[in-house]
Length: 219
Image (cartoon, rainbow, N blue to C red; front, side):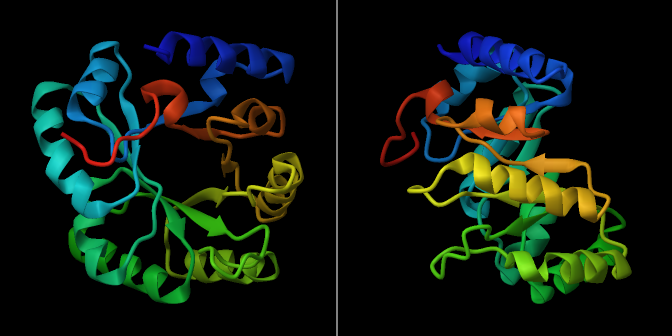
């Protein structure tokens, strides 16, 4: 199991950046992983996990939560309005708020439920037409709108274009977050999380480096 190695790399990257490991939350991305692999990581003591799909998480995590205390679940995939209620009941944090409609839906449901997960605004830093996220030019206005809705926006999230140097996108995200008084930066994955930590990441999303390559179907 690679979890100890990843924790060691996080600690070294944080120290190199003049930070402490406690400043970086390691999200183990368990999407499309067999239950046995997830169980093994839970048994090692890790408690922070990320899922891409609400429906998959809904089938997987209630059972694990019955067996393991203190699980913290993050939604790191797209959120449709018709899945928002289930997501807000299941997840502790949603990283993919990216448009007015979903923000308004979350605000309405937060009033009904009396609680709201921590939120990150997803930014399409590469302005890729096929990718979700608000454009960099829209970030300041969207943060202000979310605050007007009393949403608990923690920070910003990005997924850099695969063919570009990710550090450029991490630095851009950090500047936008600082400009808006946000201290959360959800950025960095298996291939680049050390660079993300160097540029201020508070949440890194690591899947294959912990679990191994994804399989086609979860067990």
